[in-house]
Amino acid sequence: MKFLDQAKVYIRSGDGGAGCVSFRREKFIEFGGPDGGDGGRGGDVWVECVDNLNTLIDYRYQQHFKARAGMHGMGRNRAGAKGDDVLLKVPAGTQIFAEDGETMLADLTETGQKICLARGGNGGFGNAHFKTSTNQAPRRANPGLEGQEAWIWLRLKLIADAGLVGLPNAGKSTFLAAVSAARPKIADYPFTTLHPGLGVVGLDGREFVLADIPGLIEGAHEGLGLGDRFLGHVERCRVLLHLVDGTQDDVASAYQVVRDELAAYSNALAEKPQVVALSKIDALDDDARAERLADLAAASRQRPLMLSAASGEGVELVLRALRDVIDSSRRAEEEAAPRPAWTP
Image 1 (cartoon, rainbow, N blue to C red):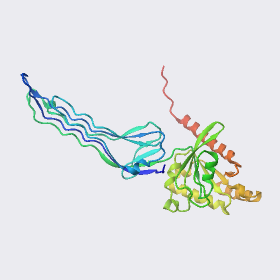
Image 2 (cartoon, rainbow, N blue to C red):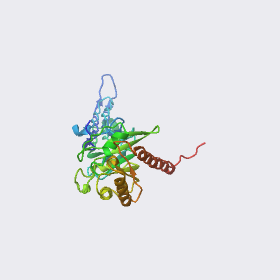
Image 3 (cartoon, rainbow, N blue to C red):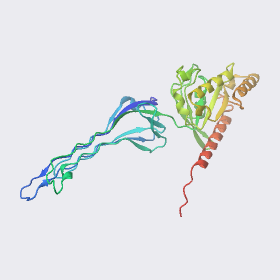
Image 4 (cartoon, rainbow, N blue to C red):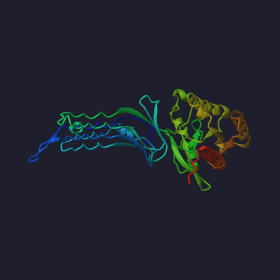
């Protein structure tokens, strides 16, 4: 399935049905009178967060969604039927924006969430509604109200516990493949990863979700390389794993480039907890490891870890560091959450 994380769609709710002008005229019925029914309400446009979806690819092939109009009222006080609703199904993590691309209408993060984006128009009153003691034969009925229409943006931000960041060819996809069942494309040229990927990591009988995004280069916030459009997929992560290629001559510069791009995209993203790790250490001898580790520690101002996804060295230690940060974040959320009021 092709990955698509942004789509623009047109939605329109249904028009309300018109009321009916009708009079009761039956043989052997002494008294007639108005009996025009009301029009039916137009259909609504809903969006629902469903399971087993991880892309917005369905909205590449269909961009227009229109609910059905309500049926018109009829004689014998028969009201029109309500128009059928339209349901847009999206994966968890989808944000909905207005046409300007900045006004957020909804943020769907949990399966089962359902929100109405456009209400259908009300049906018009039939002439039976206007009957009074002084106006016993009204010859008027209301038309139905028009539905609502709008262009909206759907933007998907993957929901993961940890996210992988780094320069191209830093070993992110190799690490994801080594610790999960995901099978991303791995090759020895830059920008092998073109779309974000998810993997479920199992450790000591517990699991967490790890997200891999395409590599960043200097100037990504200005659109260079693949740009920073995929950074939104790690905004929801609790911790970032910053991989730095240990085979580079200047690991400090490589670390700083990615840090600058994160800060240019969002201060909140740059301030997220980070685990910094030197990757591809299987290609380094002891002296080179110590030198690169010292340079990276000075640049990151923390004690980096070392790993080799190819040989497995240091991988479990990095996973445990990630899980510790994730557990701490979850505990902090639970403590900050309001407790339900006591009831007898």
